[in-house]
Image 1: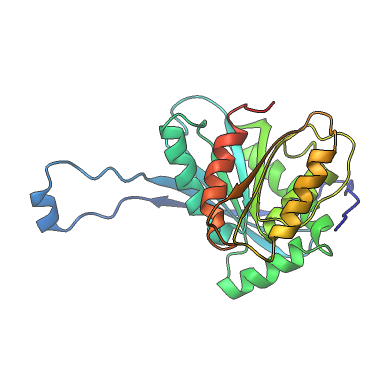
Image 2: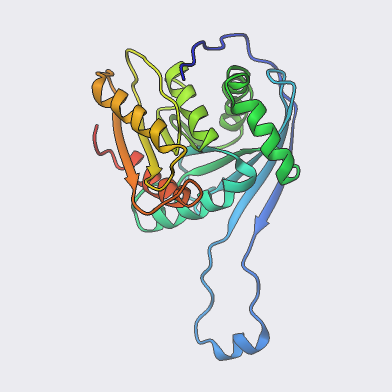
Length: 269
C-alpha cells in the first residue's frame, strides 16, 4: 500500500482543556501492612489530560500526558514518546518506559497517549477514521500543527527527540508519518504493520516488528522487510524483529519494550 502527500497548511489556534490526574499507590490493608517489613514501592505517575477540538480533522481528542518521576526536580528537558491508541496504551507505555529508565536502558521520557476519551467502541471506530488511508493526512496535520506545538509549549521537552509508536493500524500510521513527514518524528516504533512505501532519504531510527504467529499481518511485515533491505535510504537506521511465539494480539508488549529500548540505545546508527 503506497501513501503519498504531506499537509503544509498554516497552524490553527487550538483551545485546550487540562485536567491533572495524580496516580498513587493504593494503600495496603491494615493486616498486610502490619505483616510487611518493607513499604510498597509501586511507581506513581502524574498525568495531565488535555482535550482538543481539531480544526484539521473536525474531531475531538484526548491526550494523556504522563510525566516521569523526576519531572520538575531535575531541571532538564525530556524526549517525548507519542503513542497512538492512547486510551489503551498510555499507562502500559508509561510504566514500561519508567521501568526501562530505572534500569538505565533508556532515558526518562514524557509519554503522550493520543486518544479520544470515550468508550472503547468509540475509540475503535474513530481510530479507523484517523489512521486508515482516507484519514491519515488530516490526522498527521492534527499532530504536527495542533498537538505537538501545544505539548512543546507547555512541557519541558526536547523537540529534537520525538518518537511515534503504534500497533497494527497505529503502526501503519506511524510508517505513513515517517515516509510523508520524516522531519516530524526522528524515531518510529511500528508493531505489526502491513504497509510500506518508497522514499529517498529517511533521517530516522525505525524499529519494526511482528509476531511469527500473526498470519494476517506477517506477509505485510515480510514485504516491508524486503523493501527496506533492498533500499538505500540515506540516514535511516533500522531494526527488524520477528517475535517468536507471538500473535497479532500478544506481540505489542514485547514490541513496545524492545522498540523503546532500541531507538534510544543509539545502536545501528
